[in-house]
Length: 356
Ligand code: NAD
Image (cartoon, rainbow, N blue to C red):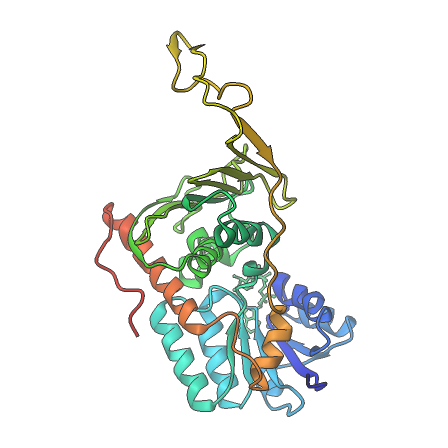
């Protein structure tokens, strides 16, 4: 493995930009050397943290010591910042959602290709442990073949910050959190999406969605329900998945969860009917004693490399990117289909997220 350290300058030293300095410290292949932010107080913070604080983006780009531009600004300016970086011969890491539309991302990719520079999108939640547990269950068929996957994130704080409220800046929860949850599903499931339906929530009165739900039907039979909410004072589990051999739940990012599966050792005993409300039911009665087993969640599937170690290897031509641009483009096109399904209030079937 090469011992070269690739240098990064961060553009947009806000919440996520400054957090990247911590992430990058976990890699010995990449190092942060500088930052630029439009705001003077953010530049001062970068300087206090020991980085070169450039007074303009042009100054940053003119510094030959910078190999990689890391874009962590609001979404509407990602594309222009990236195009300038490629023109200056820099590689680019861009925060998600990488662009305002699939058309913008195609432009960014073309600029990277003609400059022969790397463009990698920070779809970091592919590394989340809860997601990697679900991937392990999917790959190993721990609870048989998964046929229903429900992926939710629920908050009660409304839309945070300033630009996330503004449509023209790429605000709204479908772009903000939807991009993560959809990226995870498309990364995991080796089948095409054949239809989507969705609805967006505007209960907080913004002109961007404060949440959404979407149902994705995959050609292999998997149905995925994706939901993001910012008005949920009681949260639903992060994951609820059903397989042909059981059901699993992951409550939250602390990985509290369980699997309940049929007990094949026990002879089949009919459940005893229960009173439910004012009625009587056998169908919805709890399974009879001993007919199910409670199991722990499996260990998370390992990733071959961290995001930043992978980036260094990709720049050196020694590895394929874990986050591939073709996959990122697919997710953006899927988001566009979800917006369209919500607007038309119809299930959208004739969309192509898999074309060139
Ligand atoms: P933020 O508002 O906290 O920070 C953005 C910073 O960019 C601000 O300091 C602002 O002054 C600066 N800025 C704006 N325009 C600029 C420009 N043209 N040039 C230089 N600086 C500029 O926002 P944030 O929460 O850090 O989000 C930034 C990006 O990171 C967004 O794309 C967001 O979606 C993404 N993000 C990703 C994750 C993740 O887990 N991958 C988490 C949070 C945010």
